[in-house]
Length: 108
Image 1: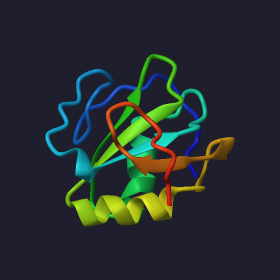
Image 2 (image 1 turned 60 degrees about the vertical axis):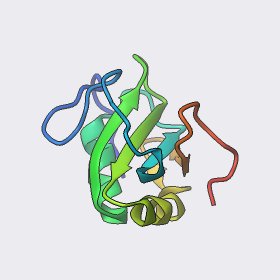
Image 3 (image 1 turned 180 degrees about the vertical axis):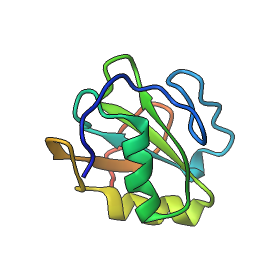
Image 4 (image 1 turned 45 degrees about the vertical axis):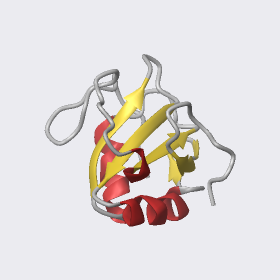
């Protein structure tokens, strides 16, 4: 379970919001419905349980959504299944393919 915390900033194996350079979107998972204040470290910890997560970034100044980068496309696809509906903070997360514009409506 991810515990809500302070501001979303990244270091050591992760990227700060607004600074991610996504070279291969097929290796990236989008997460939505995060509790306000969720930290990238907490997301990364849970994401590593779903696969070889390399980095995580909370998007925007108030959070609510995030992206997680995985080592391979296959790990990202498996992580969508494992993370979709996972309990994070006060609610359940929606996980989906990263499209650069948020939720695609799949998540399965």
